[in-house]
Amino acid sequence: MSSRPTALDLFCGAGGVSMGLHRAGFDVTGVDFRPQPHYPFRFVQADALRLPFRLTDFAFVWASPPCQAYIRGGSQYRDGRHPKLIEPIRNMLMAAGVPFVIENVPGAPLRVDLVLCGTMFGLGIRRHRWFEGSPPLAPWVPATCDHGRRITGVYGNAHGRAGAWSDMLPSDAATWSREMGIDWMAPHELTQAIPPAYSEFIGKQVLNGWRSSRSVGGASAPPEPFHVKRMKKEPPGGDRAALGWGRKVEPSD
Ligand SMILES: C[S@@+](CC[C@H](N)C(=O)[O-])C[C@H]1O[C@@H](n2cnc3c(N)ncnc32)[C@H](O)[C@@H]1O
Image (cartoon, rainbow, N blue to C red; front, side, top):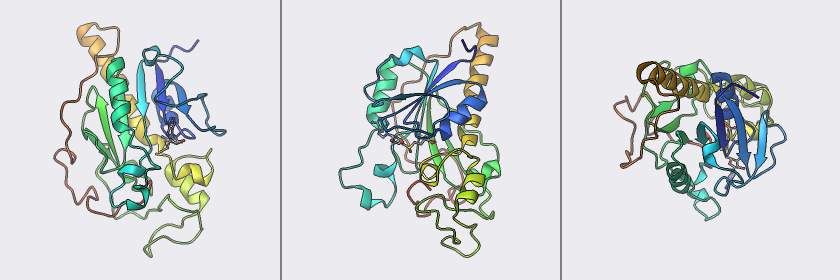
């Protein structure tokens, strides 16, 4: 049996988040209601809202509910086929009392503890994502955004041509794979994923928090989760322009 702390990755897709949690030091299990033949860890095919096991069997839970219903300007997705799952998932996680992180696109109804961008990790993508943690995540980022950097847009089809503006990197499978830091997914799976660098960064923060609370207070378990009372619409502090706020956000961008 693994001596690593256990993590459950809800809405795991082909495993971008899971790979980062694995690299951070977790023993990861993924859940998705569709088959995920490329998912690289233990996999359970199930509805994330009707799990066939207890959430409290895991030390930590990550949830990446589908983002389409929350995309700014994404009126094409407001057709009733894309459910808003953030609230029910948050309620379920809070009721279970497990430490958790919920991830989604800018504009989603999260309390924004942290915003990450691919360029903060030296990747040629932006793919801004918002994160809400319980306990809350520290707002520290690995670097500031570098929006002068050439990027590719990992959405739509991998057509092989340059992107929407002339100095973009090409949109092909090899470029997507390299800039996402993911070499086991098909292009359509890459468009749904977040780079493992994001969840590795957050997973390490979570584990370091547990280690330091043990060394300070002698606790042997993860800290109690923080119950969310108030939603913020925008990230705390933060230079809005530098973070790319106001820019049109594409599906999964
Ligand atoms: C944005 S993708 C997740 C991508 C993943 N976090 C990654 O980094 O590779 C959302 C996933 O949620 C799954 N999904 C949607 N509704 C679900 C539900 N009710 N239960 C389980 N999985 C669901 C979809 O099949 C899809 O794979």
